[in-house]
Image (cartoon, rainbow, N blue to C red):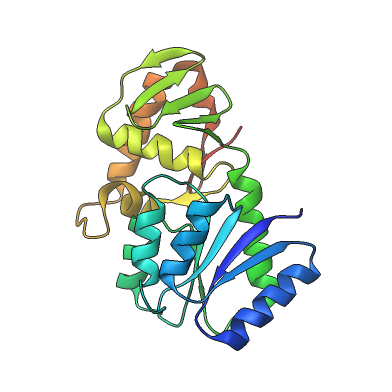
Length: 223
């Protein structure tokens, strides 16, 4: 696929191994040993994905993720030795797409990365506009269009639609949607997602067919 992947890892040996593996697959790895250098590289050019260690010097991975998400939807996978659920939930809320816990196999990490890149290319970000199928979001204004017609959504409905569009063709569990749209400290019931999805479908009209229910799993936007 010749994808440009930013690898942010402070352990030189692991960073070298990661770069060598992705290079061997025909990809274009770029390395950074700390958070500040990672942000510099992200400001200088476009990347197809970011592999981001949490415990890095200068600026930790969570802070880097927060900064990146201010103006970019590039896929982010956290590389971490942390397995605490609170850390994972916070990462998802900040905008991470996935976690890989150390130690991991290169083949699994590579497969996850390529899957995220492929999925992200289905939803096209054109400046301030996110598009997927017949749906379009103007991100800064939070305006929503279905088949060219503007529709009015509540903040939660908008957040759900944006999340599904950014993760096109990937099943999102109710827990993931709650974390990304309500926050990791939300203490209500997961059925709140179902209620809002129902209302969202009603407002989307014909485009509601894109939102699929995956039994016992969650929802996905299929275009």
